[in-house]
Length: 213
Image (cartoon, rainbow, N blue to C red; front, side, top):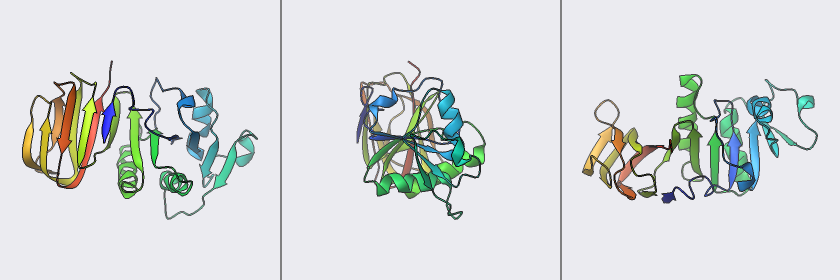
């Protein structure tokens, strides 16, 4: 995986809006092949001047007759899964491999942690990148490069463990070190080189990259 300042949004095929807090500044949605939206995020998205291609969910918070007639409506009533999970499954079923997500964080903390759990469930099937006002975050591949974010903050957060992590191009590099919840995490480091590289052998590693420029 190689993320650059030029491709960090456009590398995703489609975009999904869910019912969290949208960033103040969002990329042009025309960059994406398709715009998906959960029912709880529909009115919020329309107020931002964006009409989705697809709205999915159990429609407990939105009546279908309130949706623009040009939008495809896909009911997903199964209460064993969240609307976010069902939307990711829908995107996967349509054959897409990568998705940018807006609204993953910013409101209730339990929703945010639940959303991270949902992302992890689809990690092997979808390349998922989430965006907020501070930057973007994603589950890293075993070898990940990040270019063009020199002097920005980067945090490495194990979920719940990641082993033999080596990081270069950052202020405080790691060499085959382990991170785990309640023991050690890698928050608030700084990217010092044009390209930072993170490698690890096992586990799940959530990367937060600040993007305030």
